[in-house]
Image 1 (cartoon, rainbow, N blue to C red):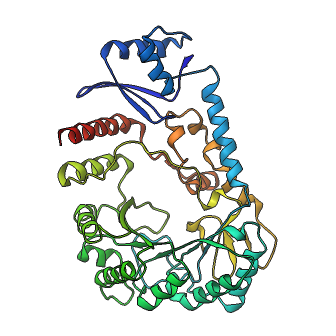
Image 2: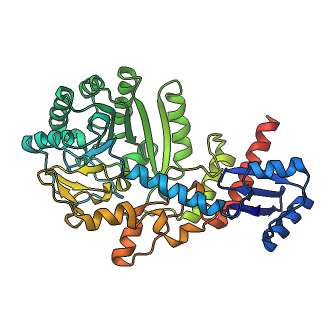
Image 3: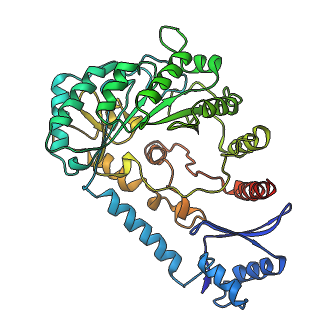
Length: 434
C-alpha cells in the first residue's frame, strides 16, 4: 500500500494536525505522532507502514493508503464514466432561445448587441422535427433561455403545445431562465400546465442596487415587480423550484447577506432557495469582478459577520459536465443555428450546425466535448483536488487554445485549501457548542 496522491497533510497553527483526502472527501484530525509518521511516509514513498490496526483500518477506508496503481486506475475509471455519459444518446438536453432580444441592460451581460430576432413559425416547426429525429427525445430535458425568452412567449407556447401533441417526445424536465419581469400570472398558469420544474431568476441586491444592476431598458425599476412575480409563482405553482440567483461583484457584495436573509425568511416554507455565483467576465463586462483570492474572505465574512449558517467551507464534489460536454445536448438559437455553449449564442464563429441541416462543425464539437475537458488539461491529471473537481469551464480553455487567453478554471485555489478546512473545522466546533 502506498500514500495516495489525493492526500493533503497540514499543520494548523490554530487547531492542530489534519489529513484531507479528496477521493473520499475525508477529513481526519491527527495527533502529532501520527502526523509526523504520515509525513515521513509521504516523503519516503515507502510501501509499508506500521500502525495500530484500528488506525490503519480508518486510513484505508478513507483511501489515505491505496494499492500501487489504484490512483491511476481511479483517474481512468472517471474518464471512462465521463465519456460514457457524454456519448450517450438515451437522454436529450436542449436549450431553446426563442429570441436574443432582452428588456434589460445588465452591466455584466455577455449577450450585448445581439440581434433582436424572434423565432419564426417555420423554425418552431423545425425545432419539433429536430427533437423527434434525435435519439433521446423520449427522455427530453428542455430549458428556455435568451435574451429574455418571455419576450417570445407565443413561440414558447407553440413549441410546448407541439411537444405535448407529439407521440415521439417525452418532456422529462422543463426549466426556465428568466429575469422574471414578464413572468405574470397568465404565463405561470400556462407553464404550470406544461409541468415547469424549475425557474432561475436573478436578483442582484437590495432594491436600490438591484435596480441599478438589473436595469430595464425603459428605465423603470424592476425589483418590486420581480418579487411580486415570484410570490405569484410560489402560490400558483408551489411544486416548481425557484432558484433566486445573485451575481456577486464588487458593487453588490455588501447587499448579499441582507438580501439572503430577507428572501430566505420570506419564502422559508416554500420551494425557493437563494444561491450566489461570482460574476465572471465573458466579454463586455462593466462591473468589477472579485478575484478568486477574494472568494474565501467573502465566505468567511458571511459566516462570521452575518451568521449565515448555510455557508459551507468544505470542498464539495462536482459532477463533470454541462451542455458543451454532451453530444446529445445543444442550444438552439432563434434562427435555428446550433451552439454548444450558452455564452456562444449569437456568435457566428461558434455555430456548430443548424436544425435545417445534418452538417455539423466537428472542429468545434471535438474541442468542446473532448479537447478542452479536464482529461486534456495537464494541470488536472495529478492535481490533489481532481476527484472532487468538474474541471471548470471548458470555454476558457477553448479561448486559451484559440487566442492564448490566460485562464484559471480551478474552483479552489490550492493555497486557500488550509483556510477552508480550518473554517470547516471551526464551524463543526461551533455546532458542538450550540
